[in-house]
Image 1 (tube, rainbow over the protein chains, first blue to last red):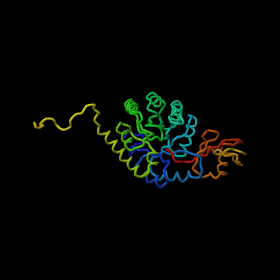
Image 2 (image 1 turned 60 degrees about the vertical axis):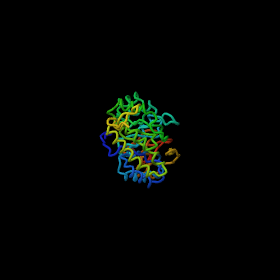
Image 3 (image 1 turned 45 degrees about the vertical axis):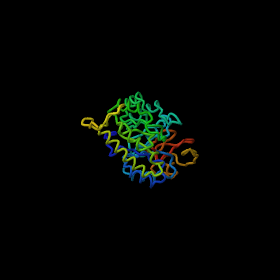
Length: 253
Length: 65
């Protein structure tokens, strides 16, 4: 598997820590998902932060703090600085939100924040779209990983623009890419890995499932299947049928 | 002096960020701080002076996606 800022992950699954019915379900879901990375956030201390920190550390996975909810580069930069101290990591999942309904990234703010944070020693995971021009600019600004969305955050729609994502993957074959956001089903995750993406990041699909632990297990199997299939070099689609049983030697009846 | 802590008006007697945090019960807590929108590293809290009307954010680890 490709490495993310020098870290090789055991599995291509990154899992969010929000919206679980209870901390116990969160812990079980993480264990059964075999996720390698947990995403976390920072919020105003209301008395629960310390206990949550202990849970997260107990998961034994890499921690990827986010800047969720930030709508400007300035906000995102300050949040990233606070996250670095709090979580003791240079990794930051950089979200600069540009639209309240779609939670679509603000490409201009994202680029500004990526440039500032990369120059300050951060290892930036920018939450971006499938836009190739923006991807090139983000890489120029110092990002060495990209996180294109599958679909709007929390929508569960899967890979909304397969053509755009395929083009993005092909344009930057050496850049580690994570499909972040919008995945609703294990088949969406398998799809992303079959297309050559290096990992997926999801949260709601597991946390809001009727049985989050079973769904975590389903995603674990799906990413394993997707990665195996990709490595096995899948056949290309064909418009016409082609018999798989040999025609030669068929009886004259 | 009167400052705003996580969006709420608070009265503190300490004159530095470190003193105010101790007063608010966060001396030992795993928190990160920002004053008027700028990050203040833990090591700088002792020498960061507060003034009336300052806006302090005290953030902790939280669930996220």
